[in-house]
Image (cartoon, helix red, strand yellow):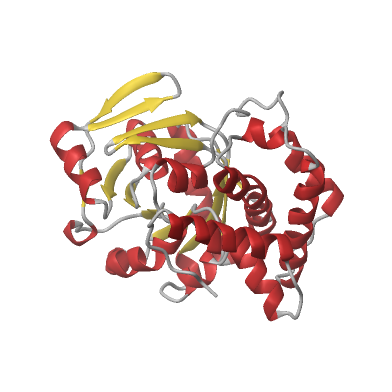
Length: 316
């Protein structure tokens, strides 16, 4: 399978690396100058769980990419998705599938502005990867990825993608309800990523805070209310219990600093808050409801961005 990875940060580069090892023709592209420059001068270095590997893959700017692809894998930050689509949309031909594995909410609507449903696969992954430096990344867990076609007639093509990922060692399943899975992942991020970034803590520290279960339940209830407006329903108590397991000492990744912490605290970059808690706050506001926790978290994250001198766009 010929694959273009559009957005080659931690997740994109590590997925591309594993798919390349699995025998696929992978092209990486990115807009971060230093990432492209270092990768092409020194080589791409991937730590795959505990094994350091040097990848022969080169990295290109989007405007340098040519050819036809079977799959375009979008792995930008949420706020960068539309600009990347505009840069590579001409590479999507009649039989190309586009797969979005971004964190956050609202990405399907963005993709549908540019592509027919027959091209679109939506997915959600719980793999974890980390930026170690430009051209150097850590894939810390080959966890499961779910994916599903938007057009019902494209199930066979979607299952071919699932097989390609599994054969390469990236676990993937065909989702029976990708909207539910997407909201579940977004809810988890909305109660861990944003809180850890705001308070400068890891997940273990968050779980030790007083009355954290009550805080998590309130955030979950706001996500549930917003999800219901899009026809996705989940039980608040059940989701609260499911979410809390990630803050318990028994969780394997309990000392993990989530991606929003990595963006805001470690790398002084703009966050995806407007596509998580901010999305929920906007959605409920449009419906005449209020999401007090999500709205306050969103304002405080943007406040921290401003205090750190990080350029950002406040989606309202």
